[in-house]
Image 1 (cartoon, rainbow, N blue to C red):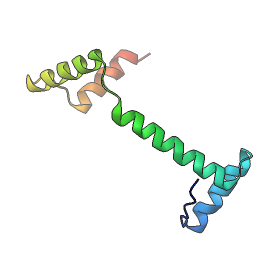
Image 2 (cartoon, one colour; image 1 turned 90 degrees about the vertical axis):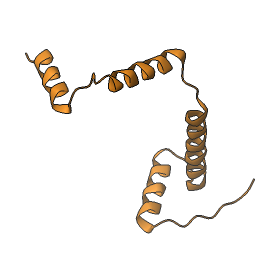
Image 3 (cartoon, rainbow, N blue to C red; image 1 turned 180 degrees about the vertical axis):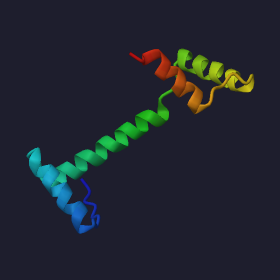
Image 4 (cartoon, helix red, strand yellow; image 1 turned 135 degrees about the vertical axis):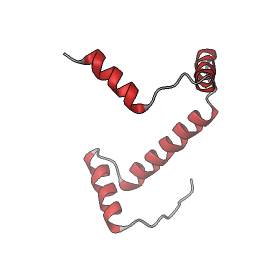
Length: 86
């Protein structure tokens, strides 16, 4: 195991201490757990390949943009309002 020292602003340190106490963990366990989860999640997202369906959907979207089949934000919002107006 390795110890890493990280300075925190007082307010941030207080918030971390409160959050750790709320779930019954020591500050050290809380920060280590949160950091490990962040790294694990980040690695999973960086290395996750697209499914064939996702890749095909992206290609269709890019083809729509290239062909000019796009809508402004206002046009899309107006369409949604019309569909869900009750």
